[in-house]
Image: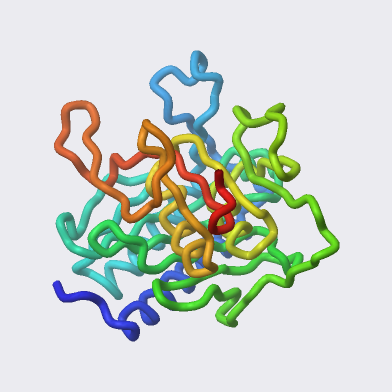
Length: 273
């Protein structure tokens, strides 16, 4: 397939934003309701019940997949909750996390997201993240496409800068708590997609992620890049500039984008060291 045009990417961004908004509305409508919850680990007791999935996650992914089957039937889809691959091998891949922050969601903690990332030959080219809250103190969708601007609910958005704030916030995993010398105070939201969106929107100055799955960050990485944020990936021998998501092997299976898992750090250019 030839390289997608600006018009192609703008259309895909708009579709991703619509899907993220639809997914977020479904999650919001179910929020606070008693829902069925299962746990993905083979032995959830031994694992400490740390990886929940709700019936809402599954229902929302089915809904998003049905829309994609109508609008982009030839494209591949990788979702967190389902293994179906309608376009395996296609240059375009949609990575879906119907609810990122499910632990928050099932505990009625109001910080979760729905995220859609679109890859072209592994490169993030469009993304949309519906967040349960935002810089506007309400739910909304941050979106972008490669070469375009960061948008919030369809309108271009650039975060205001307050020179009076000398110490900013950093999204960080547990492993970084207690570290001395960091140039900011640490926060953890429970949703990697929200933290990517918040870095892009200027609400966090940086974020670091322990190894996560493709669907957790595919949409958020595109937002960060559109906002001029530097993204680096953990190579196992240090952090290197991020370029694309590469297929990985798992459990004896052939390399596949579904198996991608890695650590990332997002922050201001030149300021990640």
